[in-house]
Length: 248
Image (cartoon, rainbow, N blue to C red; front, side, top):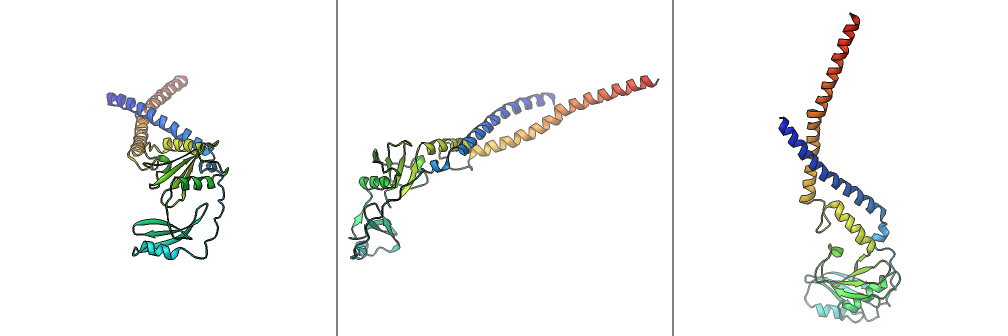
């Protein structure tokens, strides 16, 4: 039993060291996320884009219907780009955009993505570069391709992400978000996607903490308290003997 206790204490010590380091990481990352401004993480101020001119009297809806043919339409919405208004038609084959005036199909190309991002930038900065994403990155991990990335040479090193399907501004990322996302990764221990608390690594750490607590209590009763009680018994026995001598 003594040998088992020695080995258990050694294992307990090293597991405690690892868990202690993780607790330190949780404390530092949690404090850092609390100190970073969430307004800046969300992208900061955003410009109110100018409204495009009203739809001409001759609406393009009839032309849209002709182009869709027999495709069943499940939803229709009027959307605005910086220079015009669109009809967004949702069908079984996906979302399609049409010019609201002429009814002609509209695609979100490089120049359109740049114009959308520039209109939403609070300083109206000219984009530094515009590139299509070939795969989803951490910045847009919850969205779907196609997506345009529009980079700005501003103080925040901002990157705006525009949907290549709808032309919507999906995300605004900057240095504050990148720093916050790094600490978020450390905090939830999801080093791949940075989205979930329910993954094997953090579950394993949870069980390790439970084991550490259980073995800590066992070692407490097995070693420290037994030793303390033995000292207490010796002290009380010595006291009784001394009292008996004085009584004699």
